[in-house]
Image (cartoon, rainbow, N blue to C red; front, side, top):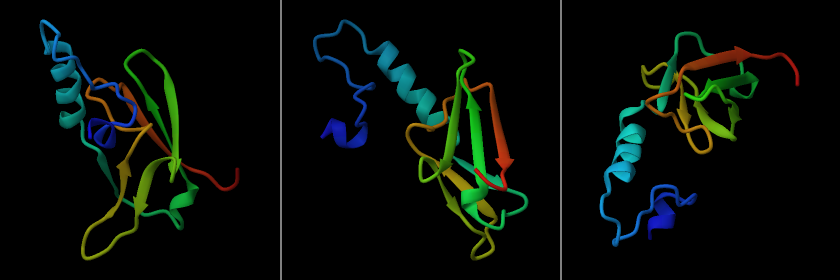
Length: 105
């Protein structure tokens, strides 16, 4: 059941552990980081977006539609938005998010 929620298993902990502090802190970071980013201007096509997330340790992760985020065009009065998913799920300590519009890859 736990692997359905978190296939990576990074948030699993042993019931024999003396403390769940680190595990609970990681979970709190995931919950507190916004996983949706609203876009002021929608792109012509969500596949034209590339998002670089700079993690706390300086590592850059490149995210694309279907591989790190899901693009939703404007609808029902809501702006266009990106919903981040693994491996690009946002963390509370991320340093930067850079959204780029590309023409060709």
